[in-house]
Image (cartoon, rainbow over the protein chains, first blue to last red):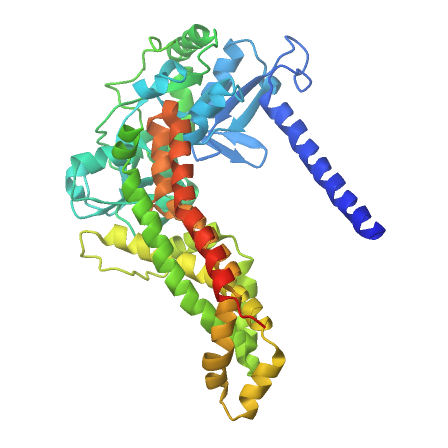
Length: 285
Length: 226
């Protein structure tokens, strides 16, 4: 009997340890006010939500973060007065972005975040800093030139994204396969199982620019929608206009063009000149 | 709330969940029974195959199995479970791959549940069956399995309830069931997210509660009195 209760106590103690370890982890990454991780100066750090799995836009590679959104985030944070080592990057998957902002887990989100009216009900947006357009990624030798050629073809996108719903409405004959991430779609495209992948052109360009798919895939280059990429902020955050000013400066200085070319230019992608440079402003709460 | 249910076709989504559950339950019950018989059979190689299957499948994450069915079986190996010319090819293919993944995974649990049922039967019964001249098949189908099923109703019911909730995993390969629609709500109606959660949770309780009650009722009613 005594032995049993001793074992029980040991298990409970281990559980309590594990729980408390979780708690302190959350505190570090979620709370921007503790200032322990920031290298002096103004004291507070800034937590920025990015994608961890989108090559060319937001990618975590070991301890390095690369991509267009990451570079824009760094440039904006610098203009807001934060140094490189005060920035904490965390992953903000598409479906959790509003929740993370509302819960204060992140200060800013740079994660191919389209400004929409329904999202503006729960968060506010600075920007847009880039206007993307929905496009198609196809095999290099494919003859698909736009959504009209998709009738009877298999198109891939991710679950719960606007792009899939758009095409479904436009071309009813298309068959839609959905996965959790674009990587899975692109994998299925490169092995020939499906015919096309759809989402914003800049995201597709990021995949086409990957070394593994070099020469295999191409972006069709006929964008058929406009997606205004904004910076997500909590509705009570008063830095929205400051972020707008920083974004406008980045375009004026030419930094933005440089960032785009460095990250997604490898596959010959250039931003749609009709819609870029984007005019930041007008979406703050 | 009704608007949310209508706009995101939550009733269709729940129907899909029920279909996934029903098909997978039947297939995994058949497969699990075969595996359980293999595991208790006197033939060494069958026993080994059954044990290996259960060990491998039971300890692999379901997400991995379901993704493998789509990316591996379909993508890499080109195995298609529907005709490519059919206008509903993707829907059918995805559904069948999902049922396949769910079935092979839960068959391992069904097998173990049934084996626990077999273990409730005194060894003397199997020996008696053999000594009156019944073959292995005869003693299995007429003596052991009928009692094993009755003794295993509670664990089998638990597997069924787990299966119902595990169907949400197949949203990963784009089957339009409940979790898939919930992702859409999270994306397009972030302000109604909590309402969406509540509806989905309630829906699953409505599905699984009767299963639990039926399990308790049947296990009390059909228990083998010894």
